[in-house]
Length: 328
Image (cartoon, rainbow, N blue to C red):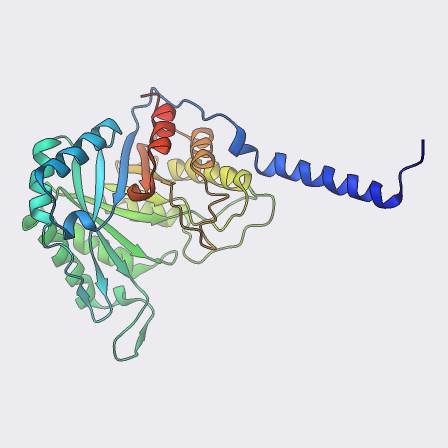
């Protein structure tokens, strides 16, 4: 038998190393989804603007209600508008009140919240660059006024604020929350998104950078004191392999639970199903399976549920996976 050439030895070694890399870092793709039943987790979904902007007949809304009930959805965040450059809310809610009223007839137990976006860093039409427009009193009041409008005029059960990107310890965001909390009717639900937490230890294979809009536990706790519900956006991690994302998610879930342990705020953890690849949301890493496996491993009873982003990209097969996970 002829001895192996040095080149063949190197090739075999490289193939072996590559195989080990694939098995180790992409193992979550092949692992079964754990069953997480028995904890009565709430399920929320982020839904597109079409439901508040376009006209739907009764049959379409009845079908949506049936789908949401079959998917065990408790809360929906219906995209209503966002605060545009020029400081006005985009008028994409002409049919929101009709939609809310009709959906409530078919799904009376569903909590229907108005999802409102506020990009804080903008370039105004005159070219002026604003780094954080929440620092302006009139902008904070405008957002608070709009929160009242979606409750009193459009009929939503709650106001879901999605302001991004909020730096850690940002005081203007706290002042915005306080103003909205003060102005909202007592029976309205006040919900907000929150950014992921900074890592206090290494949980990924490679060092994870400090990201300015990732929050400390203390800041998450402070935000929780002003709202009824927090949906933490535990995605857009920038991680490139499923195992790292799974480990990162496990850390996030456990840390979020511990941070908000002494509060009454409802706590939901974001679960990504987005099909859009971006540098921050790398779809080969931030998979539904990896997210649910990480959630299960880090789960503590302080966590109230999961929030699926986005509803429009979540396939029927993915809903089957979620149902199996919830053991429904």
